[in-house]
Length: 419
Image 1 (cartoon, helix red, strand yellow):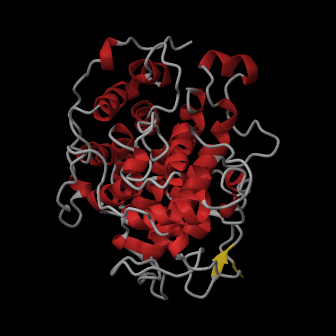
Image 2 (cartoon, one colour):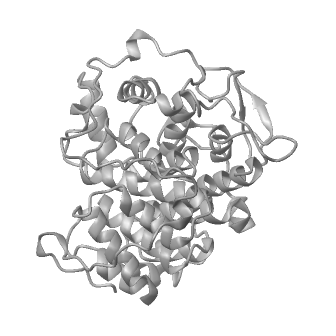
């Protein structure tokens, strides 16, 4: 895969995530009828100062973590990063994040380590799915490796369906990064989660209904009467449903996810990551892309000033004169990372949307204060998602369409009215 083309897809994935997040944020936790009553149909930014939310800032967090450790990432590395960049900082209230992140922080601050740190009431949330795209970017064309790495990240904060949702997103992005068609992207996501999981059932129902449009997708997936909108099986399925309905078209996929409401910033962020990886950064409308600046740190102050394009460049090979690319300091081959918080060995980072570098001081290395109390290699409860053997080269492009098997709603619940 040519280095230049790969980087364009990487930038499309992570900028697409940030754009989807910013477009969907105003519609978060709303029903389609409420969206229509307020804005009609959302066709662009409706906020005065559009910006990414916790979805974008946590994706940056995971991307920088991955740039530091590469394929050698362990639960101990993830836990140390949570302490270094979030839990051990005295920066006032933890703003704008979901219940899974808050539960994880409470457990880490009590001295609990992975996987015990993920034992809280919201381990099934879409908090891992929203930060999973960088793993697909890093493991482009290797869905199983993307799923393995994101499960390592999720072992600190999620369990069960929360892990499966992250794995589906990471694998889907990895397939899209290799140019796989829409049906193969969906098949790659389904291949890394258990067939009988809620995530797999919801995903199959969403893509089955995709040809009938957003009302059908939403009706097939949303659990009626359930108050929480951040269910990983629901959010991930809505995102893949929007992506499938649009056949990978960026604007159509993202706007469909936004107008379905529920956890709209996350569903649109995931749909944007999938479509951006599939079509490249040029597929993102310029007026949408231009509004995305460096992270404001509104949720994670430690991420302030970082841009998603910086992270995309860290996770992909540097293009060479002939366009083939070669490995950069991201740990792709041997898992050796970089020592500073930006991911660059020399302490430089990209600070704007154009890819121009700006010098910044590297953060101090992880100290004993940040090392995990009880390091473990556990990846959640026994019987978690299987990680399949790595496919042969180009196997993603030959993937068969997923089996379209209708599944029952969990617990016999009925779909929520689509109005």
